[in-house]
Image (cartoon, helix red, strand yellow):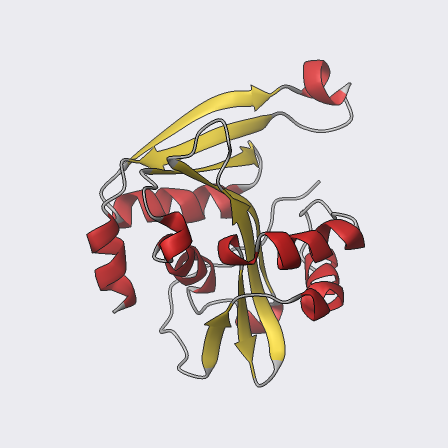
Length: 183
């Protein structure tokens, strides 16, 4: 699968793009956005609805003129409650070049639902240079370490059908620094 396009290239943010919590009615638009952003794995429509309904405090939509141009889903793993797991990052062609991915993630980390988070984690395949670039950039911006280790192996966990997923762990995070960025 080819690597994702650079969805977080440097450019000035647009004032007409707003962030909000998702609602269940956003499910179909989120499903369509994810489908338009290869190499993202497509979740079921039902999974996207559950993210909008049950995990709304851990997900964010970027919206421009009533259109969804960005989506980040995440959650706090019960086994590691001081971490915030970024599940998916999707930015439409229209939304690229506006630093939406990093701005949406920062927005999520400043929400009360993320009080107590000290690390951000995600999984990324080795060839997804756009995602590695995003998370390296966030680690630099936040002056935090980025650790990488294999989490789900191609043969052991995916029976050879999917590339190894590497755990990327950024932290410790300085919440005040992230809050100031959002200011």
